[in-house]
Length: 191
Image (cartoon, helix red, strand yellow):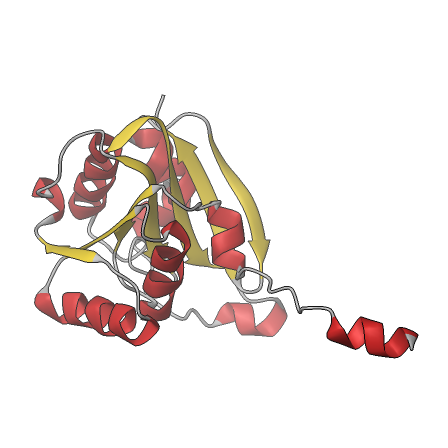
């Protein structure tokens, strides 16, 4: 009898680590920058739901198509903008949360001037009190850590990685909020 009752309980689903760590919520205005992981585009967009807004900014049509395909497959709505990092065609202070996808080295491998332009645009687009979260691959442990999955710009590494890049573009406070399941999450606030 007790086992039957336990089996009939509905299974609770757990959000993915990126959803949990970014803190994205239903109804928010979400900006995603870059498409290192197309499935992540759809996962985060699904969380804001129909009452929110999900926008993806990419540098070329190839990335735009990857984002659209992932959203279509997941059945979520996204608005994709293809533009140079220095001139994203979106209204200032129009987002609650910006997520920079860096799991494939997007941010770490950028030229310094492109990274600065990208983060300055993210700052401009966030409302006061808005958050920017950079999702990168956490360094693998032990021997596997010797081999990098992607190129890292020396300037980026020397300047403190994601934390240094966010601080340089006026995000305060900036902190690494965790490393889990192969991800590193760095957060900065627009004050």
